[in-house]
Image 1 (cartoon, rainbow, N blue to C red):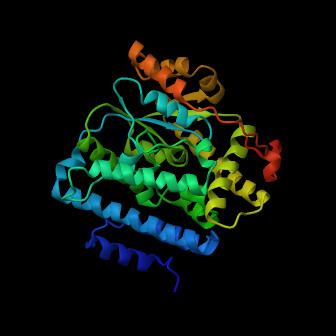
Image 2 (cartoon, rainbow, N blue to C red):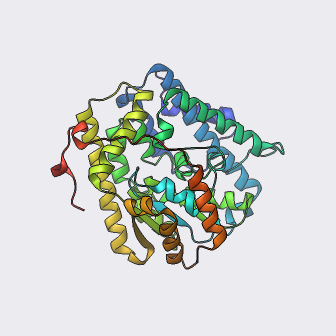
Length: 367
């Protein structure tokens, strides 16, 4: 019997956490589709399969810790959550740069990677649990660097720096992050049809738990994956302000192909470039259609920002965005942004073309 068996994994997780409460059952259909898609389509190498199993068990354990915390401290689930600022856009469109800049504006709160990976500590956790979570996250990043040496240039990450809130969606098993790391067309079809609102209710709950543990500041969140579920995000948080990054698709699409290649090569037998190109193009078309629907529904909640404008004038663009949010970039915020920019390493520019992945400009959706 395969170790990628949904029933066995759920049973093992419940044994590990000594609880049958994994925070409801709304997550289970997505979990089953994901596990079965990875088992049948992803062609994972044996070592990676074992690590993926450990990842799944860890995500189920996260659900159990959240459930236990909510039972013990129900007020944590009701912690006030100000209207969040949400940055999204196709991957590789400047979302990471903008997130790091906005997180440095006084009054804003960007959650750090280690926090997002541990939205709830186990009941009775030691006083130094935060330090332990930071160390565990650092160890995970070291493993990633060892197994995918170029990934840091594609998506810079640090355990104690702001990161993507898809870490809060991973325990829902409803995020395209899994599609980027694995070639799983059946899971992609599932994401296109499923109701994402239960996942976003879990996402909001985890944000409230983070606020309860560490209050203060307007949440500034970032995840390209939101692009594919903006209607659900707005249903759960109609007060959200969404910044949508845009980049020439002739650059963004092959860059996303490159990201998927780097992740999938680390974990599985690589797919032919043309097959990967078609897989990514279908994702992009679905994401852009989702953005168009959501903007038509609530145009006042969205601000479009061009990648080239951000790169050309990052501080000026940040100031314009802060004004759109109804505030001002004061001298302290501007100085923090400039210090951050001054510390960023210069990576060689990588040039990818549509032709590298069997595509050309005629394949791209209309802007």
